[in-house]
Length: 102
Picture 1 (tube, rainbow, N blue to C red):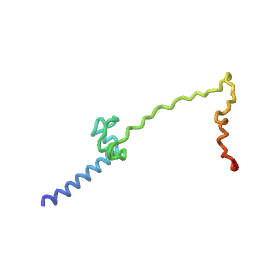
Picture 2 (cartoon, rainbow, N blue to C red):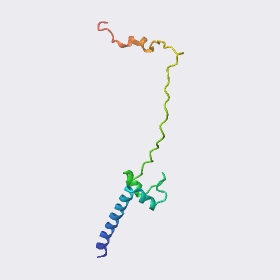
Picture 3 (cartoon, one colour):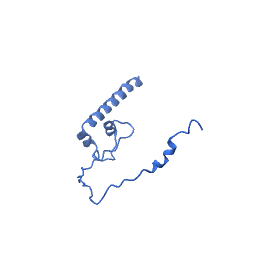
Picture 4 (cartoon, rainbow, N blue to C red):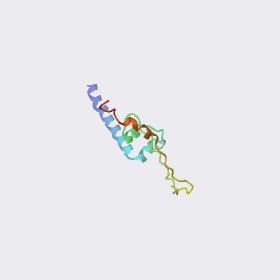
């Protein structure tokens, strides 16, 4: 008799805790009320695992840097293009098969 009443109780507790973790994953403000260190990168609990979509280990937060200013570079007038022959052109002998009549 005792085992029959324990299973539904345990199932209810598990469902309630899972739905609480889901609600805290959706609302980060509620999660911060429970855990004061919820905004740190090292914080890991059931809510952060559910929010990341993984159950073993959550990903590190993406590092986003500010965009850098690109400076347009004009060609240097002191540089002149020079034609350099390709070194593999001397190996063109190896391109052909041996003659059919040898």
